[in-house]
Image (cartoon, rainbow, N blue to C red):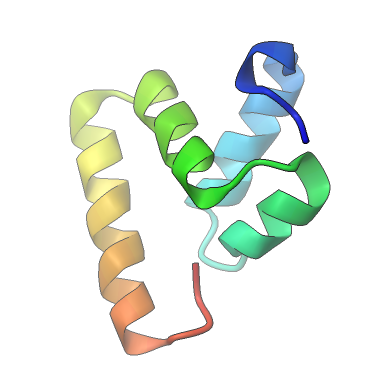
Length: 71
């Protein structure tokens, strides 16, 4: 399992892009980087502006309510 402290800037950037994508699930990020959903949210909070993070969480939550297998 990868620790957030062990990630390079390129890996963090890739994870942020994956998390922002509507086509990549938390399970996909877990398989590729070993980060749980909670860790991805923490990483996103640390790397996005407050408003961007809140908008992302709202989008993920709303979309997840509509499709159970999404994020």
